Amino acid sequence: MTVPAPHQSSGPASSGARTTSRVRRDRALLVLEDGTVLRGNAYGARGTRLGEVVFTTGMTGYQETLTDPSYAGQIVVQTAPHIGNTGANAEDMESRKVWVRGYAVRDASRLASNWRSEQSLDDLLVSSEVVGISDIDTRMLTRRLRDAGSMRGGIFSGEALQSTEDELLAQVREQPTMSGSSFVEEVTIAQPVVLEPEGEVLGTVAAVDLGIKGASPRSMLSRGLRVHLLPATTSLEELLAVAPDAVFFSNGPGDPAAATAQVELLRGVLDAGLPFFGICFGNQLLGRALGFDTYKLKFGHRGINQPVMDRETGKVEITAHNHGFAVDVPLEGEHEAPHDGGRYGRVVVTHVGLNDDVVEGIRCLDRPAYSVQYHPEAAGGPHDASYLFDRLVGLVTERRASGSSTGSSSHIQSSQKES
Image (cartoon, rainbow, N blue to C red):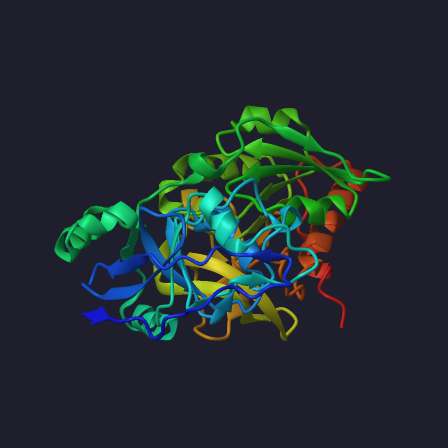
């Protein structure tokens, strides 16, 4: 199936804006593994990029999306039709680089008319070597991904178009699927880093970087927590050596079933009785550490407008998501964690997605551990769930006050969000 571009932009860029993208009309193709071919214009760098094609529904925050390490290995389709109008700047980078492999948009703005803009989005994509495509029907593409599920795909421009469409399709189908893929060692930091809060230090958190965004340590630092940012390859001995009052596992890309070393590290944390908080990939790894399975969603949750119910308060939060996998835990009742004959005690589902009943949060009743699948630290918003970091502070201060070496789950149960 070949789909033509819905329109072709023309004419010179307007004057008077802070930054202006170069007007280029090189051809580009986006090819899906089912044979769908979308024709558009090259956007960003030229060349070939292969990856899992996924869509995100965020109307704002495209730079935060591009720099989220959880998108490693993926080609991102923006459902919002107009992208790039506020340009790009160093302040909005959520990590050290742009992580998406490819980028697909409908209308790529040629003008960046925002006072914070330091360069055009097109220039950021070029400097980051991200191959993109514009002027395609992203609505049709999103509907196809919703119907058939996320697929392998490729964006091709420049010299790559010397190959036939059949040859390009063969390249797409030869790449590995996301299931079974690991990107943790690609996105994690190389060496430990210590981040100090301003003012009084309330406690220390060992944050394992599985693809962390800058907003996570900022959320902890602003609450008086010292953060030891640790590589994903950290051993239990190295983690315990920083004497943490709690442990945090971040978001990250790939299949949680492939992160066996990090699951074992988390079991060591639970055995040590340390309070634990995980988000996104960290939620999936807590589920696997407890003995539950994870599974791949048909097309995932990606955007900043996902409704989630806190089952312990009955309140609904609008939340930011970026996940293609989920934890398989029965929604109702308490369940003994399957690992090692129930070694970690009882578990409950605390949060559920209202669009499709996907598990969005779990809590251990007999260990000081909880996690959520969504992003309470969302830099582009919303911030309905930021209280989850306050809950972490409560666990840290409770542990320090008691001098406990085993931790407690009482604060998790008592520190629900204020009405």
